[in-house]
Structures are given as structure tokens and as C-alpha cells.
Image (cartoon, rainbow, N blue to C red):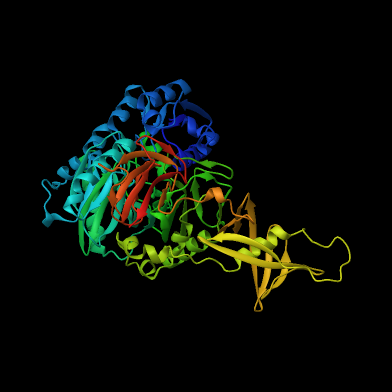
Length: 613
């Protein structure tokens, strides 16, 4: 029996594994980088061990330090979570060689499937060799790891070398392995996967299908189980292929076999020899705890002859600290509040007051809804996200709500090109026109201008807010009866709640304020000063860092005085394990280049200036 588990991961998955361990009566050991010293996964564990440093390569990717930590803390097993070293056969061997139980597949199975190139060979599929125009579009893909890191779609042959280099750098940073390969890119396909669970006694379960087609940068955003609209024949084929892949490598534990589905054809993509981020939807549908099953399998217990019966439908949405309207730029800062209404499952690695840093993935939480039908599950999740209180850095919450309510998604007709087609419409600002007024009235609560009797009406007060990139000025008045504004009746106003009567309809606005940042329901505003600071102005054409990060590359030959074209990549920033291109905003002349390779920058740092032609 396992008595103590070291969780070789961080964030949401570490908290999720710790939760199951507590329910099973198993003690937990967390590991943490310096940047995670006060993180939630450290606080919920029974004990914790420091990994000196903050970069993943110095901490969570150091298998030797993690094994040493497990031994020092008296753990008798290691659970790798997902990402980092979860699919590293060398790490699995090191854990076993140290006399610890590895809660995962055998190292030989990891080796056979962890490299996507070798996995394809095992399934009889060869990657592309020399790429020609006829092969386009193609996908450059990291041989190791997952999560969308090290993946690039190439539509022009001239871009292949550059995208291959960027994919190598991203993969090396995320997984410690820079090997990449090229495969055909199937337009309009659906990303469908099969959850498998295998024991040491020869039993392999195929636990239904999942659809993970809604993706950004090849990283999943919304997932569901079962995958909608699949024929019985295709579902059976996917199950058979998944079980065949597992048996071919002597698989043990939880894993996922992924496919690209086009029509009635299934194209094998890869096998992930670990727990997936989206595993909760399978848990909800089958009524099981996959982490508990992983532990039972590691202890030598046998699975039943047949898996549990599937019931209902489940949908998961990944809440990221990012701005979809600005090329998915990751966001950092203080998470003041994260609260999602009851009735949905919330897996998160953060609580109120935690800081979101620059070193790791911007995933804040996963919200999961389960219901008897797909339509009910989708409605339930969209409503919960819409009513959630998320106060802090910008997130993709509005995008998730709109995606779930999009006609194409509602009808189950989505594919991996969903955001390529609909992103502009899904990120179109739609601010609540009464949010600035509600913010101003909440701020004015208790600031009555009446110090005594006056016979003259109060002059209008004004407040300015930035909302969805635009400035809004609102006016209100102090009266004997309280606060008033033109066009509405103020029913109630205090610092946390404003109720307005708009054409006979009462509307409630919950208001929270943190410095100059104001949240009115789901709407975020910035209170503007009465007099703008002249020092905050930048030269026209300035390229500002959209996020904190490191300048990892500057376009070859780029120098002040060079002519640049609109959209031309000028430099690359690395933040939260991804590389982000900074492009020229217009065709013109590069009049200033302030960025240098290796430079750490903060949001708003001027990187370069382009003088338009």
C-alpha cells in the first residue's frame, strides 16, 4: 500500500492529485520552485520541498532533485501529473531505481510512445521528409511533450525553417527536448481522443471519447465527453485503435490516444502516456476518479472486466490568464478573486490574493459541468462562467462564454479551425453601457456634498473610465434623496451594489474595486485620473511589450533605419513557456530599436519604434 506520494508538478494538477490522496488517506509531498513558495499546491500538501530557482529547467525539469526530495521527505511513490517530466522515461526509471513506486506507465511504454515520431512508426505512419509546395500546409511538431508547445502550422515554404527553429526552442524550454518533426496538416478536422486505463493483469479499458477541437495555438480550450456526432462504427474503430496502441507497448495506468477525425476517417496523432488536462470530463461521465484508479493500479489492484457505464455529458472550459484579442497574450498580476457559482466543478491552482507570475503556463482553472444531455451541460457551464467573479489579470472568460453559445458549437459542427474563423467576432468588445455609471455611483456612495441646508441644486459630478479600450465619461448628481443620473432611476447605491431602473427594468450591478481597477459584474474598467499624466505618452509607432517576458530573438539583420513591412516579425518574447512574435504595426522605417536579446521586460516597455511611411 502507498502511504505517501510526492507530486512532481505544480499548480492545478498538483492540487487535484493532492485532493484524491487526502480522500484515500495518503500523505502528500509538494515540490516548489522559488516563484511558487507560497503557491496553493504547496499550501494544500502535508509537506513541501524547495527546488532552488524559478525557471522550469532548474526546478520542475530536474528529475534528480525531485527524486532526492521524495527520499528526503519519506515518500514511497511519485505521481508526475501532466507536463514537465510526466512523459520522461529516464525520470520514471530514476524513480523506480530509487526504490519508489512510479504512478504511471512503464518506462519502456513511455519510450515507445513519448516520441511522436517513434509512436507513428509503431502505428505504421512515417513523418514527412523533404517538404515541397505540394505538401503544404504542414505542421511542425515537437517530438516530446504536449500542451501545444513546439507546434507551428506552416503555409508558406519560405516560413518553414524559421518556424522549425521557433518550435525547437519552445520544445527545449518546455520539455528539455528540442526534437521536432513535420507532418501533413489536415484542414477542417476534429481533434478526438480516447481515454484508456490499463492494469498489470492484462485488462485495458477504453473510457469513451472526448472532443477537444476548440484550440488556440494547438492547445485545447474547450473539451467534452463523449465526442458529439460520431457514428457507432467510428467510435468502435477509435476504441479498437486505442486499445491496440496500449497493448502494443504493454501500457499500464491512465493514458490517452489522440486522433484527427475527418468525416468517417480517423488519423492517429499520438499517445500521451500520462493523465490529460481534460480528464475531468471523462471522470464526470463515467463516475470514477482517474487519479484514484492510477494509484490502485500502481498498487497492483486489478480493474474490473468491464468499465463503468457512461452517463450524461460533460464539458470543460480552461480559464486562462490571457487576452485572446491581443494574440492570446498571457497576463500576470494579482488574482484578487476567483469564484464560480456552485453546480460546476472547479479545478484550480490559485486562490484569492495569489500572484500569477511569468514562469509557467497561464492556466488559472478548469470549470466542468455535467448534465444528462449535451445541451444542458453546455448551458450550465456557460451560465456559471458568465456569473463567475474573476478579478485580476485579463482572462479568456468572455471568449469561453461566447464559444459555448456559438451556433456552430451548439450544433456540434466545430473543428480545429473554429477560432481561425470566428476569433474576431468572438472577441468583439460588447461592454455593458451602464457599467461605468454603476462604478461611478458605487464610488460616490457616502460622499454627499450636503454639509448643511442648500437652496441650490448640486452641480453634476463626472468620472472617467476606460472600458474595452475606449474612454467613457459619466455624470451623476447628489440630491436630497440620494444619487441621481439622467435616463435612469437609482434604486440603490452603495460601495458594493448598485441597482438601476432602466425603462422599468431593474438591473443589479455588484461592484468591487482594487486601486484604479473596478469590476462591475463581469465587466472590468479602469478609473482614469482627472488630469492625464503627460509622461505616460509614447512616440507614435512605439511597440510596447504586451506582457512581462524575455527577449529571446531579434529578426536577423534588423537595425535602426531599416525598412519594415506591416506585420513583419521584428522580435520574439518568451513568456509563460510560449514564444510571442512582436510585429511591425505599419509599413515604414524602424526609427529606434531598444530591445536586446536576453533582456527582461515589463508590460509597457518600449521595445522599438516604427515611423510609418
